[in-house]
Image (cartoon, rainbow, N blue to C red; front, side, top):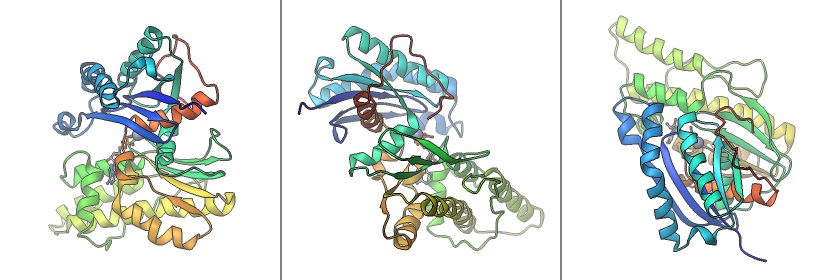
Length: 335
Ligand code: KG4
Ligand code: ZN
């Protein structure tokens, strides 16, 4: 069978990324230009700044991707691009670049949902088996997704307020840690113990999530300590936050596993890089449900990249998903 090469572009938030992937599993080249150093000074992503930097970087990132692969645009089968969700200005830059390439080289244009990309990142390390459950944990999303078959997505539960990554970043900020806070909360929590009791998230639907109450509980804890002139170990507070947040994730995952009997459960999204969450899955959940195969993406595929968009883009391409040149960025697109 002929090999399929997809060139993908991802620019939904603060990474300008392009990648070429062969047959939906082999990375030929993968380039990510991160803007973290710029946004760090503001303590979060400034959308207007992000889209301007995407404009500056996008051509260079695509050229480097082709150069590293020793390929030309003519050699790929299609151009895939993240259509949404994300920051509209940021998405727009990637979509325009993809449309321009597709038009100039007469290639099919394949729109991809960012979350489908995070889920399919796992196909870079293993063959996905269906039915599959995906626990999507990123800066903008917290979702339990059921995939009965390839390229079929049903959202079983979602967050009622903050996404888990967003909550971790805010907790990091109130602890005085650099951006992105979640990464540093993970780091300091390794030296802490979950000794503080924080508000446990409650939701009406047993598969939904909620993190704003927990985030407020961390804030109130710090305020109370300040008011009473009491000290606390930030490491212990970070560990307590993670313990409460991740227990919510795992309790929902368990209900979904028992209800839907998946062959595989995959972790997806930036927070999948968290060391505590990864060990809770490998040392806890995987042992409790030994008939389910648990897949945790390698650290390099957890946060935003275009290889994951290329993998999902290949599957979409094989399923006949196409867009014409009227394609526009859609920050609120459904999976
Ligand atoms: O998937 P991603 O790169 O972007 C979105 O689609 O949102 O996820 C970014 C999120 C940020 O909130 C970041 O703090 C979080 O992933 N993150 C982590 C870790 N690495 C990245 N959160 C906790 N622990 C980590 N090690
Ligand atoms: Zn993402």
